Each structure stands twice: as C-alpha cells, then as structure tokens.
Image (cartoon, rainbow, N blue to C red; front, side, top):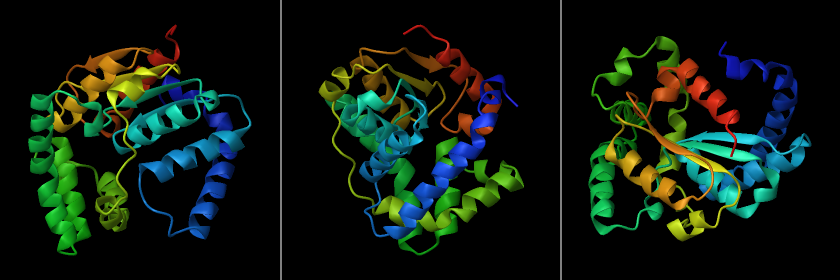
Length: 239
C-alpha cells in the first residue's frame, strides 16, 4: 500500500457509510440528469454529510470539472483540490489552442461515439481506453481485472455521451478561486487533455501546477503507487 493511502484505512467504514447513502440517493433519483453538475452537487452533499472537517479532494479527467464546479460553488467545504487533466474546452481562450483541442477531441471520441450509437457499449469502452492510452492495443494489454472493471461499467457509455453539457467554467471563473487548487498533466497525454490543463493552470492563482514527465492520461491506473506518491507530496505542500 502506498504511504499516502495508509492513513485512509481507518476511515474506510465512514466512507463506505456515506457511499451507501449516496448510492441510495442515486437510486431514489435515478432519472437525475447525468453530468458534471449532478456530480458536483453530489460531492457538495457528501462533504456536508461527512462532518469531519474540510476534506482534500483529488480528481482525474471527467471528475475534474465536477470538483472545480464544487470549488466555485462551495469553497468553504474543502481544504484543497488536486486535479489531474481536466478535459473541458471552456478553460481555453486562444483560438489556435481551441482548434487543436477540437481536432484532438474529434479524433479521440468520434470512433467511441460511433460504437455507442451502434449499440456496442463494450466496443465503445475498448475504443475509449485505447484512445486514452494512446495505443490501439492498449485495452488488450491490460490485466484481466482492469478489463473486467471497465466492461462492468460499459452500461454508462450511452449516458456519458448524452450527458447534460457541463456548466461553463471559463478562465475568468478559475481566476476567482481562492481555495488552493493544483493542476497536473502528463507529458505523454493527448492534446485534448494537455491543451485544457495548461490554460486552467495558468488561470488558477492558487495551488501549484506542473507537467508530470513520462506519463499519459491513464497514469493513475497504470501506476497507482506513483500517482499516490504525487498526491502525498501535494498534501505536504505549503500553499
């Protein structure tokens, strides 16, 4: 177990309790619109119910926009946030960067959407993981355990591609953040992830921001101990 995770073990029953509450709420309102606004609200509700001080939050990819929305809505609930590669275009203002983002996003997501529209959610998962990993054979090289978990969540693919558009968060909004928020991105990640991460980092006046050498978008799954080490280092930063 990575050092950064050891201290969390004693809190597992508490987190399981709140996870169960959130699960029951989700079942009770299963037709709530799927999207980052819903998940930001869920995070706020979780933090309010936690009753254990202001938690530090770590997010990756899709979840990044949700936690940024939560930070803007209820900064009083959180102590700090670390986001690895938030992939939303609204942080980007430069026209050339926006065009490059659009090209990269189309190349990555168009084949995935094609599979979803064809009703093959497992193939959509395969294509999404391959694109995220930057290699057409990436999915099949993973462990059986990782592939099983990913296929078990294939049912979410249609909702992911039919989600409510995310709340607009521009660079001016990020500039108003006073809660310490740090951005990281991988040096080997696709443009769709790095182009959105860098402007977010430039806009946020708090926290620390850095490119992580030698890693791509799926780094937290590929090397959880390495990712946990970065989290532990961030937790000890003086911000």
